[in-house]
Length: 317
Image 1 (spheres, rainbow, N blue to C red):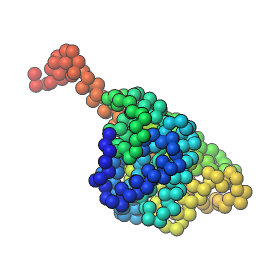
Image 2 (image 1 turned 180 degrees about the vertical axis):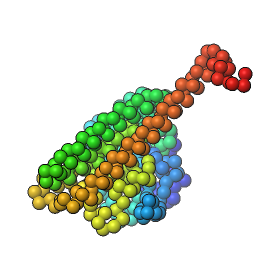
Image 3 (image 1 turned 45 degrees about the horizontal axis):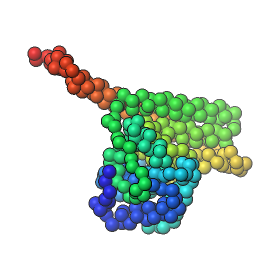
């Protein structure tokens, strides 16, 4: 793995060094901190504004950071990282968003040894921002796309079905005038559709209920997703805030304001997210299938007797 971020501008290096110091101060069980994704590949977008599908949209790449721990549960480490996230944004100069994931060194090495797609890519492209030196990463074995396709399909089937069930439940409560329950189930439908996308593309999905963070984490996979909650007007922002807040407010606040008109405006958005989730997930799974077929053919050519196999597939002979 790489160890230098010298290619990044001074402001970005300052951000990352500040993040590392916050993590080490509040999470002493940290063994490694790894930058991956667009910043590690030097393919990041600092800020971009454009018109997509007639909508003015803005985009900024996240700092994707994997925090590897030992001697603390993933849940407890995740809570501490949420606090680090909050502290980071207290500085008004910090404009680049963070996307944390965390795993124990034991789980990380298990996933690496099993060739889990997300982790093998992190190890291949990642940059080590901190290393305690107490552990070594397991060797990354060659990816098998038939395994990736199988895992992605299982994840997709589970989460997409769950999202559809929540959307069906939302319709049930809407027809009975129970609007707060409708809003909560619509939130859950969105959450599961976003989970489906993340799992298909990464085979990794840390638990998250914040729709802002969920939508931000998947928008890089398809610009069409920006059409769901464009947030380009006061009304669009209000509707997104409403469905995002419904996870807690619709269950615990008896005065949570949600009207039939609000839900009428939100249902088409959730249905669009459902349709886009199906489309881009199936496209990615088909891509894995093509890669798997390519791997199988390559293994045939490399196997004993491969000359005869190649000859049989050469129409010129």
